[in-house]
Image 1: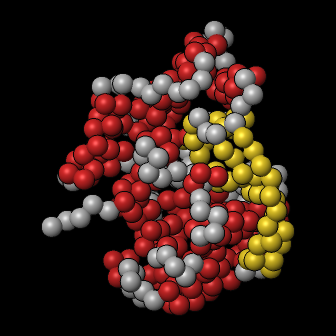
Image 2: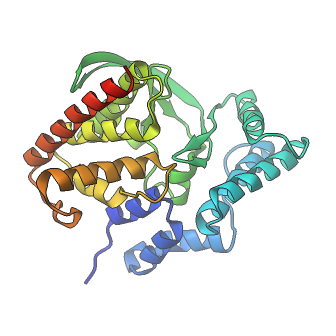
Amino acid sequence: MKKFSKDILRGMIVKGRLREAMAYLEQFPEAAALYQKGMDLYQKEHYLTYDVDGELNEILLVYQKYYRDAFYLELSAEEAAQRLRERLAERFQTAPDFSLDKLEEMAGAAFRRKSFHALMGRTSGYYGPYIWKVEELRHYKVELPEGTQDYAVKFLDGFIMKSWLDYISFGETGTGGWSNGDGLIHCVRAAWDLESEDFQVSLLKHEAQHAMDQARYKDITNKELEYRAKLVELIYSKERRMLERFVSQADATRADNGHGLSAEHIVRGFEICLKKDRGRLAGLPIETVQTVARSLFAESCKEMAAKYR
């Protein structure tokens, strides 16, 4: 009898395949509550209400409708973004041809006026704001394949919304942090046990590699950033089978999904190095995974030096 797997669910959600995820949830009695939440939200349009004032809830409702358009109705990315632009323009009573970038700036400013922090824009090709209340700065020394460096980590807490990935999964998965080129690692505090390998590797080392690469390679692509940072996770992970997770996330169908493309790149690299298809990569010894990941990372370093010299 097939068992419910959160890793399989996360793999579907990371790829933006909400309908596929809903069909998967429907099969398992233990996932009935999560499935019902999804039906209430996406089929019946019983949208969430947040602990903010009316004006800000109206803005968040616009984004909730965008998530439904993009992931449940499966509109094209362009059509979903156009509907988002039209609703924001109506909300702020601007001219119909106001750009989405400017409308998002207005939405972010509305939250900042009420003492929230707001990061707008796209994550893996889709729009969705990060809205939070509290920040705390700490410093860490982080070991990476190319050397050890000091990094400042800004811990973020008191979130109202954490973009599309957290929303469509009801918090089952989501962005745990990011590096946006300012030299800081931004960390969603509630997502991590700070003593765990999860935090030390999948947040600190992953985002520190982003910061190092962004400083060194000014025109680096999102796919390249994610590929190198995911290899770093494989190099340093001893307690978790991260390769199996990346196999479930691999997706070459969407050119704007850096996470799916980078996972596909890694899986393909392992297939070539080990002469095994992806269905036989599960259960590899951790030492083998680390050795292959180091080799792929070294190869990537040569490619980056040649491309961005």
